[in-house]
Length: 189
Image (cartoon, rainbow, N blue to C red; front, side, top):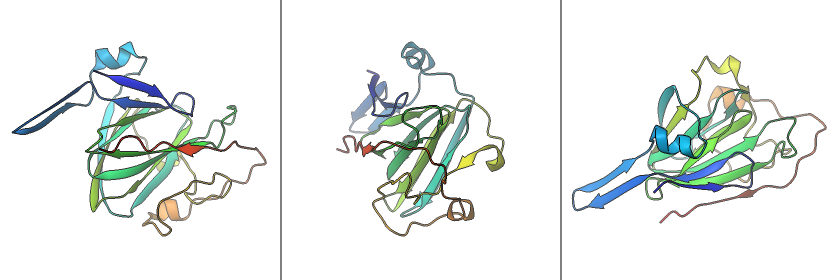
């Protein structure tokens, strides 16, 4: 049964997929069913992407003002972070973290105007995400620095492996205030 829980960030949802079946042969997981997801208000998606990364790779914080993302980790274990980057929101620059893995099978719905990042916690991990709009390149997105003290994300490691884009991301320098956020590790059993 599809289970949807609200998180501390408005519009960010933690989802347990519809169907999980395990027996002596292995397991079966249905990660998306348009009718069921529509029933709980989740939009349509037009593009699926997968990314394989090694331990301590940190990807993100990236986002744009129009794309919804449905993310999960079908293999391995990641520390998923979502940051509110909607300047009109009372939760501007607030963040929340989740552990996503092949063991807990959780998904996170990331709204437009929210940054999305993850850190690989296993030897390697496969990250999957559905997008509500087509990707048009990094120059159409915002990038936030993973260690920006104004955001204050608590990462489980000190020296992640970063892309050039993420290493050279600028620190946020606006005078806007933020409220404290917390992590939500999820059930990793």
